[in-house]
Image 1 (cartoon, rainbow, N blue to C red):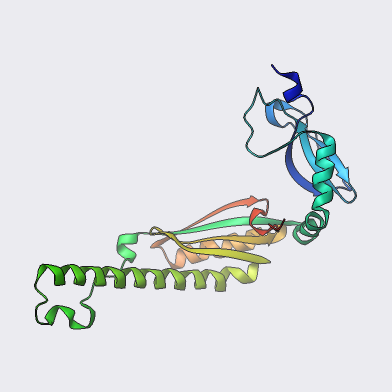
Image 2 (image 1 turned 45 degrees about the vertical axis):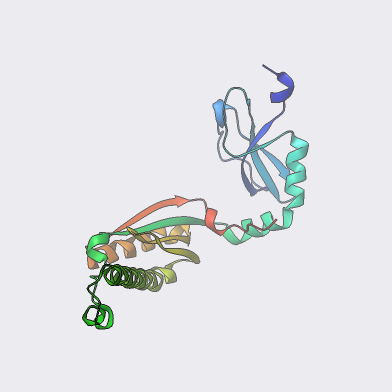
Length: 219
């Protein structure tokens, strides 16, 4: 083992408010104890990591000094995020439908099939492409309407939200909600009510998670 490669390396788990100690002892990768390295009003939760013994996915810094440099470089952003997101969690939502049931039929657009020469191979190919495009457009419109319904019903129960429409044909809406901890139960109850109102859909909630989707991404 190359001791110079592993000695002093730190795995960074999270940036936290720096005025409170850990509520209880925590173990990190390879059961290494997690400690806090404070910088002004924030702190980094880190543990020693042996790069030969584990394959971490995340941020590994070479020393405590490098951790402090990282905190100093983005101090204002980290502090603003912690102040804005304090006491809040993220709830994920996926709305799933039977895409074949949701997909509209393929009507003859503007009587195309009745045009002279529409029975040829080229015309039939063009008709099929036009019908497919029309069906996909209608499917997207349905997904957008569903996303608007989710925003209308669940948005007022959240501090913030982000939505993605039609990530896949079977996933018309995926969303993340920033919610005060005390408001999680109300949001989950409303999602359950929407499920009862629309049994042809599946409303899948996950979390609570740390508010990953709501931190600033700027350099």
